[in-house]
Length: 483
Image 1 (tube, rainbow, N blue to C red):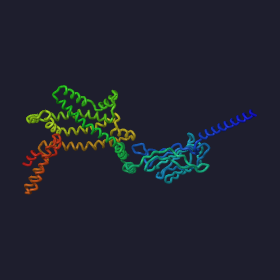
Image 2: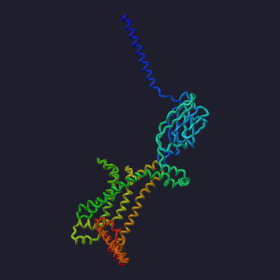
Image 3: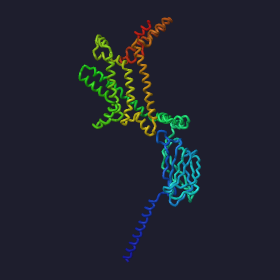
Image 4: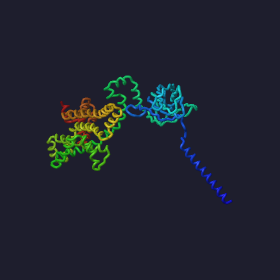
């Protein structure tokens, strides 16, 4: 009796074990099955880039949608419908249908109907199993606001209408006013005629010129930042080098001569390479933009040193003697007498050197600094067109042309002031007007003008020298009036 009970318990345990094993196998098989079986599997859905000068897909602008799917084994397909979000449109689009059985193309008659955001393709004969179906929809548009969009829809097989598997998301860029302007240019007949000319289409393509301005703006800003930060340091270094070169100490003169001659005698391109690739070899790692500022400041300082030296030596010796007769020492003479006159004389040359330094920042593109020319180079590589370089030239001219005009005005005013010209003194003009009219109020105006002139005379020497070409000169003005 006891043995029978043991055998019964053993059979029960074996039965329970078999049930557990069967359940585990069933669960493993269920986990291996897909969540949902599709008679038509979506392989991919892509859109052709329509960004002028880029590789993005812009909403609201016509592009080409390519959808691919595979018919499952044992299935047949008689119709398919592609659907996009409400703001998308298949209107005015054309569809190319391709059916492949392996590497062999199957001739298949089909009827395409587009309505709003959906496109339906009906096949005259069912698409056979294991076939690859490709739909190329030319001229469709995605929503203008941009985003990530999937292609969904439905298909019809022998079991009826089935839900189409969603495609991978397609990233779409929002249609900005800039892109709308480019799209408007694309539709203009004169733009097409302009671009038909090989030279104009390669160097001055209107659509690409417009997009280049927006793409190159960050590089242009970086150019301005580099030169505006570097130039004050260059002026300080240049002044130090100029004083060293005219110093009485032979060692200081020798150091200044070597410094100036080496920097002026070697190309800036070589100096950039030495700084950007040489310093990391000795363990000095500096941010590229900061290093660009350092290189431009050092290079410009050598040229500014010669400009300042020539300006200082152009001052007549009588100025030094007059200052000495007033009891001034060498430092006081230099700061109060010589430098103010030097500043006035070198303003045009310094401004011209600033323009040169601003243009020379383009050489930093050779070492990866993302300035204006680097952006232009990248955009030209993507588009295969020279127009981005023309846009960069326009950015350079935006700065250089006004500065050239300013230099011309300053030179004219300096030359006129040296000849004794310039605006008439306000005090004398107001005084003559009051005498002719016999008006006492005119005398009060003249007095206030004298006060303003005296205030201007109290400005620091260097600042007074800067504004002098634009101010009245009492002595020469009086002589002119007397004449």
